[in-house]
Length: 440
Image (tube, rainbow, N blue to C red; front, top):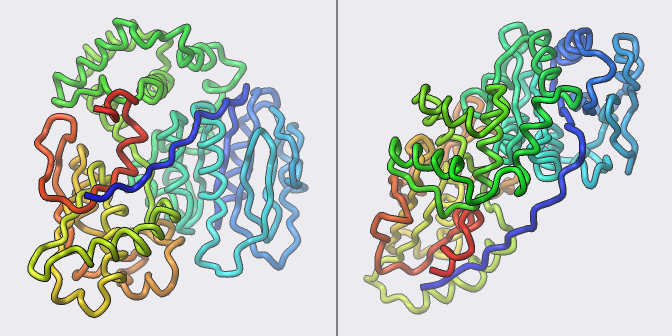
């Protein structure tokens, strides 16, 4: 059985104030202008506006926005330090990310299908600001922003989308369909909620402080009582999952309900069974992508899979297992790699790919094999045309690849494992488990 090394990163230090990233395309300027009308100039948060704009035209966004807010409005520059009570606007023909509190600019990709400036910024914000990241999608139909909102939720941040007041609702609808959204509100109501989450509001700050080890001890009885409630309702025991991830997502729910103590939240769970289910779903949030680890994918394609095929008898099936498969991208990526390696032998080789996950909703999406444009944007054109078919505004995995993959709900910590396996791929699993469980 072959193993693929998994790379994990250290937790990054979170900045001292929240950053609100606002993504939009058509109609978005009007929506953001409306939002700013109801925001005071001293919320203690920074705002970054990422709008899809034509690369040929000079931007006057900073000038326009300065007329409707007392906050300082700046067009982003390379390594510009982000400060609270400032608004930063992405320049034309650029993509942007945030690292160590600095805005980093790069040229817009030449291939338009890879231009997703909202996802690009949201993903970096989630990684660097974690629970102090707030993502907002306003008016627009561009297939952009959903992956970034998912990442923000996964790291403990909050996500908003504009309601039916948006002139164009495609971006918001896609994010809602992918369960990447916490609150669906008008710009005025968004401003009211942002004020509640701002650095000037004691409730938000006290809730964030509960993430610290000194305030919520890993052995806190109330914390483990919360996990016991989830266990009783769902049958899933999260006691061996990374405690910092669990704490971050519990505090996320506390912030949404304006709850400031674990004791109060524990009582809230006892009185609201639906909240236990919501917390359970939050704990299952997993941001994944096709060919997530390019280095590991190449190692598989060039070394592991060719070596495996040489060792296999002609009549012996190739068996792979992807635990914590999430919405299927990892399983389908392995299937594509295997078909590329097999070449002309693909039709005569038996392949069985077992892909499992705790989340029934994720498994159901994986079975369908339908993905949005922003979910397939990093796949090279050659692979995209070979392994996907266009269905309206989405892309579906071709039937020959879907037929290789058997998706099922499965709890890897208590259900029997699959046997006689050649490859196990765990890139969505090991990063969420405590070190001791990995060793076991």
